[in-house]
Length: 329
Ligand SMILES: [Zn+2]
Image 1: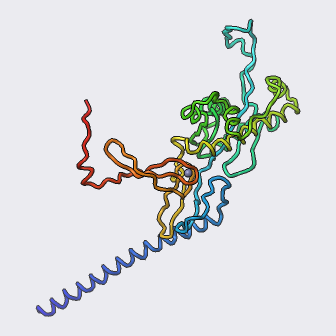
Image 2 (image 1 turned 90 degrees about the vertical axis):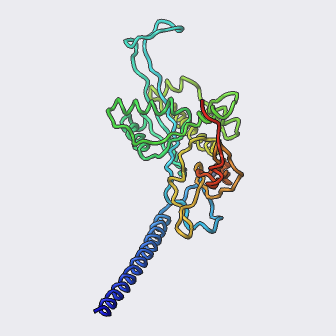
């Protein structure tokens, strides 16, 4: 009986071992399957991906198997508006009641361009009519992950939101804003922060010269010749935004993190670290950053020049335990 029992237990044990080995093997096979499925999926996406003209990271790093396949959708935007008109009694220190408003200001036109696209989109009350113009910009904003503008946080975006609100439209799908004026104001002390001045200082061009307020009068009256100048003026502002953004990139703080939109993987299928500002894979170590109680690895983007740092401490646990700090009163 004992020998039969032992034999039975022995067989059971061997069976358990075989089953356990099979389970481990299945787990390994599953991991390999998932990895190659991911790589295959990335390859399909890469084949259908149109490389962007900006943010080109090149292919210098042989370790990187696939380029960025999920990209941040950035929209450059600028709008032009018509002033309010009404009745008033004098020129200085006027307090105009709402009963004296004849017509509230409104959006005349907008110009926009997707990052990586050369085409500049344009729509106006003159060309498309009010409804189509507002619907089109609503759709573009809803598609964007981030919108680049110059003083758009205080001007362009609230004005467009008012247009949506007046027409009882839903808000566009949320997007982040990169206001280049805020970067210029907070990081530099230039003689003037006007887009025209900043662009001239950097030698990237200037705004289109026009005849002044009478251009707006002509556009509000529907004069074709004036509308041609307005379109050129509006589109040139977007061109300046594109050029200025590239130069301002390493100075922009709280830029939407391109790492979150990047799908670059190495030959092992592991995610590759990219520059949060430009998406480049070319990062170089640049010393250490020591904060109150932790130390982090510093990097610098070799493509756009943004100073970066790792998110996890490099201090070993023993060192962390040995570090103390002053108490707060
Ligand atoms: Zn970069």
